[in-house]
Image (cartoon, rainbow, N blue to C red; front, side):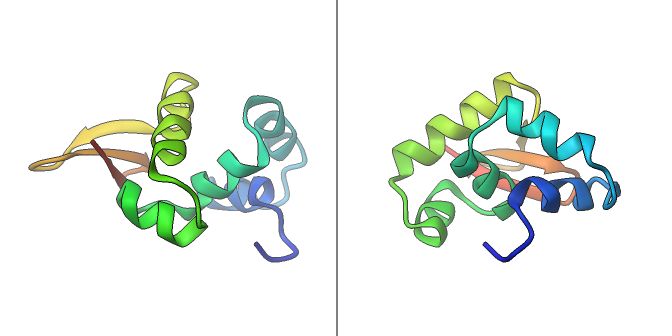
Length: 94
């Protein structure tokens, strides 16, 4: 990513650009790879795997773990299942 960490980028997307707490809380919840994935949404699991140069299985596993932690949410949009971090971002999971 750029000089801005994925954790800080997440805070910016949550309209808390100057927050020092949100990135720290997120660091306690997920690892760097998951943070990179989180801020790379939306897209399908396949898209994210290509974009981040990681196996689809790793992407799916990370999304499921972040779902359990309340960071991404499931949404049905026709077919297939989508994961999202807000109403505008979604990622497809098998």
